[in-house]
Length: 385
Image 1 (cartoon, rainbow, N blue to C red):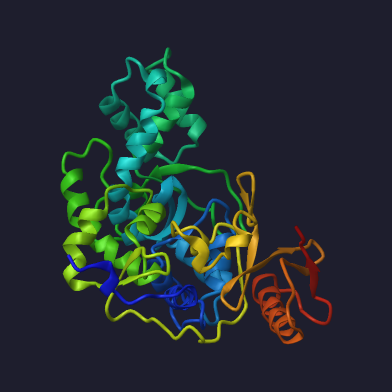
Image 2: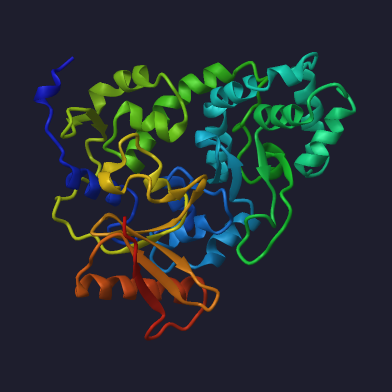
């Protein structure tokens, strides 16, 4: 193995520009929304609206109706995958990525073992699958159904077992822009039907071939992660995926990867042909929603979040909408009920920068709210301390 001292060094700004390029944030891409969702390996989606705003920041001409239509036609779905959090995925990725993250779901289920004493998990998996595939169910309905079979079990533990053992998706109208609906769940296989060619499968916790699926798929996932988030370290990908012990996969791929190191000496891997723009490449302002994967997919987030702003995008378990200025976190933003967009800057900005931010904010208002923007539509404040 070559010494790390022989690897080229990428400074923070170089890492920033490379990551922004992969994330389609240096310039909006002329790309269909479905292709963008697949390229980005999904959009984090705890709330309904963030995936729409994520695509607006990245795609030329994007309007919410495009992603809403993909959801209604079942070309994209909402399900728990990376980091055990809800994501919007292409139908194909929903089927192929879910088995790769089964191990974290098994670990999560292990925390509830005391509430599952006497519960046959294989039988629970079969019963829960049949129940949700008969028609989409709420989690409360699933819990009540399982309690009929195991009345002495802890109710929450039964719910956790069902969602950890099965590849459950949230069915529409949940997640569709401009509509609302209770969270109802069925299996990804049932929901997709003929949308994805037969042969792809998300499996479940009882699938005997799960280990083989994971072994075959992780290396492909490494390459796709680097395409969307690289250059990156092994630990970066582990943080993004919620997986452990990925070093062996990177080592098997090493001969076909470019290798760098950051200013702290951490080894970074990348695809040889992936874009790595110059550190002085202009980066326009971008309004990102809460839970944007750009800020959540690396162990070392200083490539986007300056060290002195660490932790400023969260309060408890709630994330704020964030503003990128010159490619780095520079403030927070929110939409007011009156149709105005308020930007709170962490520090100062030049008049030219504020004009660029205001123009981008007006674009957000026009495209995402239908509000006719004008003077005063974007307001500025500041956050100190």
